[in-house]
Image (tube, rainbow, N blue to C red; front, side, top):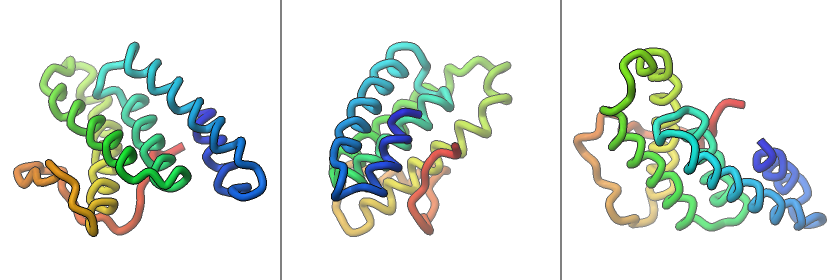
Length: 139
């Protein structure tokens, strides 16, 4: 949440307070390290953090390549590990996971619509959709 907080401040005070961009980066990197270490790839909190971190990189840092990399790695890892999710947890968390994964996928399509990112053609992926606007995890 600290990363999101600083992302919003960086959007508002982009030219007058650049320290918010730095603090946002630090918060997202620290949170990413923690969720990578402690949460499974399919956990909604991990997916939501990666979604918001990718939006931060794209919108605040203007680092479109890293934004796509973060989103794609999170999406691909979750897809790969979906089969191993405990059945009891799967039904309870599936809706959250599916929503956030769709938002990740939508952003990837939006961000790469004019670019030519490699490995974006997953034509057999049921989660493919035409994005209407940039998505981020619900707060």
